[in-house]
Image 1 (cartoon, rainbow, N blue to C red):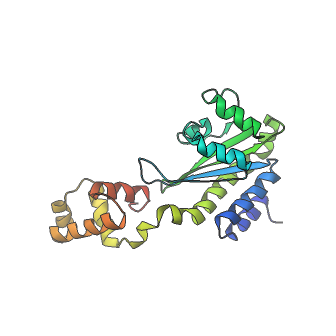
Image 2: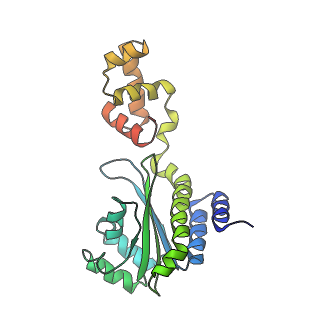
Image 3: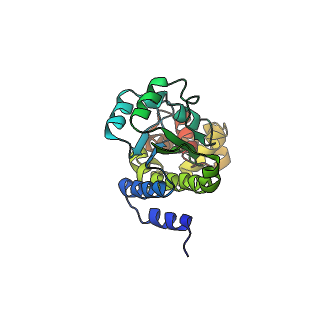
Length: 237
């Protein structure tokens, strides 16, 4: 018999668009007793203002209000997810710093919630929220369901990353050559163009040529920015 986790992975693998993937996540959330779910995907670049994509089945008016009020900037669950991978349960204490947000969320029927972040080696972050309007989350419920809830977080992250990240990042790394990556690796170690030329037994002009190409392909302002971006994209492992 196929397990819940195996069926979820099979369903997500068969989905080829953001909408399809989210519908599968929504179905899994409902099977766990939550009428609402949301996922926020955060690209690693640019560092000053990373691109994000939010998908959820919240009431339409609340989605609009959340966006217009820029609640993402003060949402305690989002702030928690940026610094911790531990799950968090909604409470008055959690939302003490954002009482207006909490009041309006409850008015939208979002009264009970559980959220957990996901991170990967490429610097892409995300957070799954499971919410409902009814019964509080009990210790017994967590004992019964939290393993599946945590599994859903990771499955949702990698499935949504697969279908959403190309649009967020434009896949700049696909055009980098092995030599360009090699030069960036040495630059990341603090080597100058002269030092890299000796290590790789190529001219300084050739090193700079590869650096210039990498900077262009990674849509960066200079070598330092290109190295940082390449590292965050997991290209320098």
